[in-house]
Structures are given as structure tokens and as C-alpha cells.
Image (cartoon, rainbow, N blue to C red; front, side, top):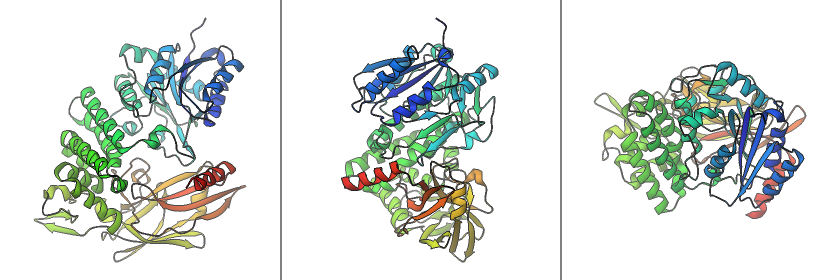
Length: 510
């Protein structure tokens, strides 16, 4: 029997009905059944997913290797078991919620062979407003540098890996991690790889956000996320020696996973959960937050991490409450340096609140009113005093006027519709000093504005009713909202029967 070119490993746990589209997309790959193997590991599904795997196995004899096992509590065990059963020259991992473009595997394998690559990324597209950082897919690159590229913020396992690389370095998923085990797996593979390539010429992978958002990542509690982040940080420190290369990986962890632990929703947790987050984030900041990393973070994130490290839980909660409920604090100048006057300033070390070299601080905005003006979404905001700034919804710039500390922002609904994916899109609003640079916008490459932009907030602002608009032959809903981090977002959502049904079911459960 010939060895397949690629084995696709899918870990399955209660992913119906999304699993059906996933398996259909795999069975229909243009690479052909003779060149591929699909290893599907059922991790104790209770929603009919196990029977669905068996049905596909019967329909496609010889293509599927189906393994059933009791639930393990996370994807690491089924991924490892699937990897052990894989026989292909290359291995590709896919989430059971997600699906591939028809030519994905054929193109990925051809690129790996042509470029002699150990790891190949194909462009990932978000579905149902799932956010995917796109800067890594700006262009096709045959030889990507892990440390001099956006790759450290795109370390999901949705990539093609050379099997020989994984075996030579014994790279496997950490089974002591219920969530996030793909990050150390992918990081080590990229770190050990002789060549990494990225392909931006095709929609390879469709990452789906479930309407009901019930997968393990969405449901993860803060305590589990703290534990996961600490394991990841320790893994990075053990894999890569101190210096700029380690910092290039660490800064993305602080800007992404760790920053999200101290977002506004921390205020709504019970006291023991808050204490666990404070202690864990404080430890990680004390051990790994170097000055070089701190300078690359947005002022808001850097201040919260420093206060978690040097202050009490109540100090941290007071800082978060200022942003979430009050708004931008005043700025004071002492001895030629500028400080944000958050609660705790003057008592905690001044360095916690230093914004002297923070380009995003003068453009930190709080929305005070949001509404519709014909075909425009209009936002009135107050800011930190910048006289020249730009505001965008990621890659879409707004029309902005500044009068004193009042900023007026207008987005064209027609442009939001025209530039959104047919599956829906959610964009974060952010402000930048000076003229608009799409590569620095919050949401394009950063969760919090590490590239010199500040997320627009809306503490206490009442949101207007969603607007329904037709674009082409389809109806869409356009709506501003505030996410769990306190950031102002604009969502463009297709009005489909499935989405309406999901909303009705959620309403009935309340």
C-alpha cells in the first residue's frame, strides 16, 4: 500500500452539525483519496458525532481511520492518538467545527514539496464573525522568519507539518493542558523547522465560530486560562533562551492571552477567581515581563500588568473600573515624565503609570454617544488631547473631526457592508496618532494596540438599535457593541435562518 502524501487529523467532541461540513470538505479534496488519509478521533461525543464518523467511513472505504475513545477532557489526547495513527508524509490538523477549501491540501502539499518546507500555513478565513489575525497572510512567502514576522500571534495548529520533523524532535501535544495545547506544539515545530512558508493565494481554511459558542475554548474559565498561560510561558522560557527571540514570542503572549485575563470582565468574577487571576498574572509579569516587552505593549495593557505585579487585587480592580466605568484618567507631568492618574498613582511605583513614551496614550478615546445618521454610524468621543488622530474599524478608516477634546467619528454603512465577508465580520475600533496606517489598527495584528493604536472604549454608553441593510441579494445586520474587554466593536452579520433560530433559542433559555 502506498504511503499517503498527507494525513488529516481531526479531534471530534460534540461538534454537530458543523462536523458534517468539515468531513464533507475533507472527503471532497482535489488531492484525491489515493493521496490522503483522514484520521478522525471521537473523544466521547454524545451528540451523534460518533455515528456521523462511522457513516462517512462507510461511504468512503479506505479513506477514513475512525477511532472512538472515552472523553479525555480536551483535544490534546485525541490529537496525539490521531498523530500516532497517521501514516502520511505530512500531517494537517483541523478543528471539527471548521472546513477546508476544495484545493487546500493539494496546494499545501505541492508548496511543501516545491519549497522543501517543514511547516506551511494557508490563509485562514473567519466564519460567523470569528476573528482571525490577517497580517500573516498579507503575501505569500516561501521562507518565513519566526521571529521577524507576525507568526508568533498565529500559532494555532491549523498548518501542514512535515511528519519527519515531528518525529525527529518528538513533538507532541501536552496532555496536561486542557486548552491551548496547540500553541506549544506549533511553536516548537516552527522553532525546529528548517523552512516555514505562508500561502496567501487561496482561502485554505475556514475557522467557524459556533452560533451557540459552546466549544471548550469559548467556555474556558479564567482559572483554567491562567493555568494555561503559565504553562505556555514556562514552555517558551524553556525552549528559547533569554533575548530578543524569546521576547518576540513572549510579547504576543502578553498582548494576547495574558492581557485578556485582566480585561473588564474580571470585574464580574467572584472574589476567589479574581484573586487567582491577580496572583497568576502578577507572577507571569514578575518572571517574564522585561522592559523591552513592556515598551511594545499598549499603555492600558502595560499599566494593568504592572499593577497586577506591584499592587494588590483591589488596586488592579480599581484601575480596570476606571477604564470600564469612568473613562480616560487625567495625565500629570512630573520631572519631565507623563503619568496616567489611575487609582493607586502616588502610592504604587510611578513606573506602573508612566506613559511618557506611549504613542497610543494621547489617542485613548471614550465614546460618549453612538447613533445612526442616515447611512452613517456616528460616534462622539472625548480623548486625551491629541490634535491629529485617525480612527478606524480595523482596515476601514472613519471620517474624523476634532474640536478641543471632542472627537466626531463617522463610518459609512455602505462601506462596512461592501468590505465585509459574506459570512459576517466583526471589527474593533481603534485610534492612532497622525494619519491612518491599516497595519497598526487594533484587531488586525494586535488584541490591545501593541502597534501604537488605542482601542476605542464606550463606558456606560447606550447602544443604538441594530440597522438592517441589504447588500446584493442578502440582508445584513450592522450593529455596534462592546465586547468583554470593553472595546467598541462593529459587527456586520448576515441574516440567515440558522442565525435567527440560534438567537430565538438563546432568548427562550433566558
